Length: 172
Image 1 (cartoon, one colour):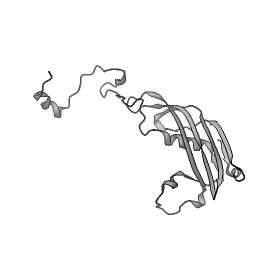
Image 2 (spheres, helix red, strand yellow):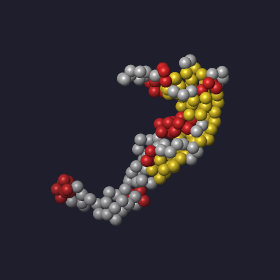
Image 3 (cartoon, helix red, strand yellow):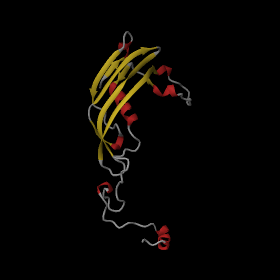
Image 4 (tube, helix red, strand yellow):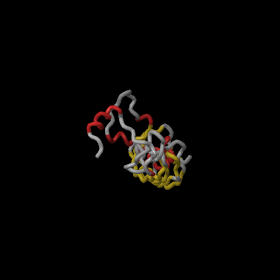
């Protein structure tokens, strides 16, 4: 685990550049694997808390949600976050958040965990539905063939609800 003690940034900003492994489970079921992530940034004291800004870069492999094939995926994201003590977190059950509140992390221990920071930034950069290509044709629902590799031998299925319309306009 790579951690930076926050008090190191009380006097002067702390620069970091670290190659690290992402924790297991980053990307969920859609992630087939990740290479080493490069996390670079700067941690500085600001007011009652700290500001951390930088970038994360990593190459990985995701699984397409349509055809289930793996494909390469790269993340190159910039970030800027405010770190505030947990004592400053809102205590009400329901709080209306502003855009500025979305880039805040509250800390209980005075450390910045670089692995968790990198993992969070990668998770935020992932697509909701990973596709190997925008026009991925997916799998045949009958035989399971990958339709991106060509047509399958299955006969075309006709929805019975539309069969009568097909009889009205026979193919030429």
